[in-house]
Image 1 (spheres, one colour):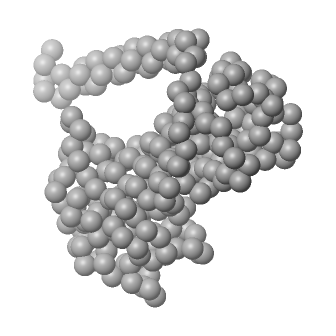
Image 2: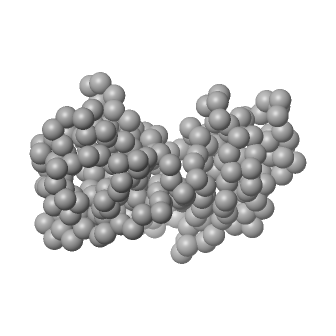
Length: 263
């Protein structure tokens, strides 16, 4: 199943005792929906373990179920709270959710930024490199990044990252490094040195909230899930968020009026 969730509502993706996590919610909902009976027997897998605060529109979970794909997703959506299934696929027993052909992340930078400087910095990371300075992982730090770029979407600058896999915190550290160069605090040569084996450099860690896992792709065709009830539930959540956004936008405007001396 392809799943979507707001990472701010969870303590990360992986199951943790006593904490509400994405994986915990998915497993509990599948059991309540009777799509699976036992976690181990179902051979449950997650494609990507997103950090706390990171959202997803296309993460993937895989499991064995006695139900067919579409009914499984609908039954799951009826029980789940905050994690929604929007596409499904039937896969062979040998399928591994971890072996994706591509993972696609986007990071939306708030505020004013120089798109060209960011793009120039990010180009350094394209290709196969040792990213030991950009992850907390200590094994398998040599990775291939197929795309790392910057583009303007409306009033925001969006950073795109595509690769078969990413290491722990890697995208957030690449974002921090690109912003470091954009600000003038560092140079592209600094990034190139950081990719050399044996160096020790740290450019910081960007906040998790603007990061979204857009998709995890395989050589598998997914079917969209038509689920009007769940769509209506999500619509109500969106309407409430828009009301909140409208209030806070107007509140900020009031403070700006005070700043300019308007009465």
